[in-house]
Length: 230
Ligand code: ATP
Image 1: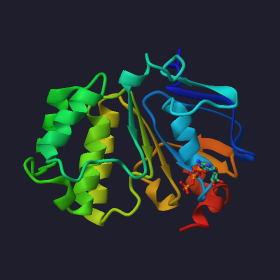
Image 2 (image 1 turned 30 degrees about the vertical axis):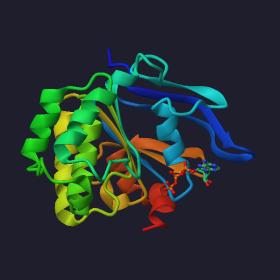
Image 3 (image 1 turned 90 degrees about the vertical axis):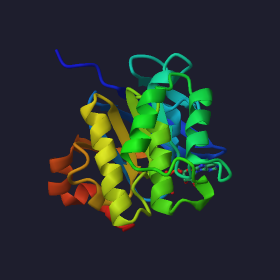
């Protein structure tokens, strides 16, 4: 039969105070897919990724990742890239990678070094002196460093120059080809084509559609809410 989904949201509801960020969200992310969460600012994309990473607990509903709850057992198998990734400006690239090995359960050191070398990162340079696109590549490598089965990325392509963007897409494709399920958020519909194969459209905390990317791009109205923010 079909492989189990890598991520299942079942009736997920999250409120911050009396502000409801996610409202009864249900969808499944096929294992091995590259899935985009799209929706305008405030639609709930970040909240959903944080729930999937186990960083917050839904008020109602459940998130299942890699066959279980997003707890300690799943953590070594999940890579997470926050929107403003906390890299230490004073550390060199090499020190950053060594810190990754210390802080991340499941870290695959050889893999991380290989990615850094393949990306041509200047290992002795301080993070604070890296060009933004290069820093973004390092942040992505930090998320890929444990060779995760599930990679969660919050707006990984936003604000990248074309070169950094192409390289980041290539890195994501490489991870997907290696068997990693990728879930990324974006509010740019232009990010979808050639990158994602599935799309979940969020609108004010609710799932408006969960479809294959061709259907999303063909039925333009589905993603109009996202496109309004371009
Ligand atoms: P963006 O594209 O701006 O990151 P998003 O789709 O990721 O938006 P969320 O960040 O998940 O959306 O926010 C969903 C809703 O929850 C928004 O209305 C936001 O203002 C609210 N919200 C998010 N985080 C908090 C918080 N820590 N405290 C209060 N409200 C919050």
